[in-house]
Amino acid sequence: MSFSPLVDELIESLRCLPGVGQKSAQRMALQLLERDRDGALRLANAINESVMGVGRCEKCQNLTEVDICRLCSDEKRNNGQLCIVETPSDLLAIELSNTFSGRYFVLMGHLSPIDGIGPEEIGLDKLMRLVSEASIREVILATNSTIEGDATAFYIADLLEGQNILVTRIAHGIPVGGQLGYVDGGTLSHALTGRKPIDG
Image (tube, rainbow, N blue to C red):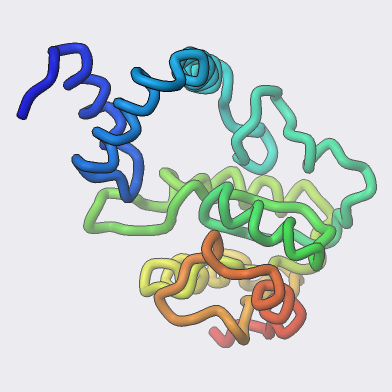
């Protein structure tokens, strides 16, 4: 069944969200149009403003609407520790565990040569500049426990070899194939506390 062109376009647009299929998109679209037009306008405005105004932090690559994000501007953070994560949702998950008080670097993905994603695409040149300019004593590799995440962690560990920096990898509690954004705070806290150095 087809609705009007505008309704069909709204349904199709909602399908760009992860995990949203045809039926879910249809329910969302009809809910917004039938019962919550104010909410629909607020959503449309928030999406438009975010897409136009949100960029990446100049230091850590996290999503922000200012040049330097709130975490990088926080003088209370531990400058000696740098936690490397794949996505902003991974960063948020670690922050919610209340275990880590250092700095972050967000890769915005992982190495995947088959998809054309190499070191430059995930900002490893920026990461190496950050490491050379800051007084970092430990780099914590908190990439996901996937084949790509592990490969990215080992690649970064190789880059940091000889830098006189302790390189550790989160361990314990993160399931193989799991993603940090879906792991509970207690498990993340255990993983951060039980991190260990990476063997070359």
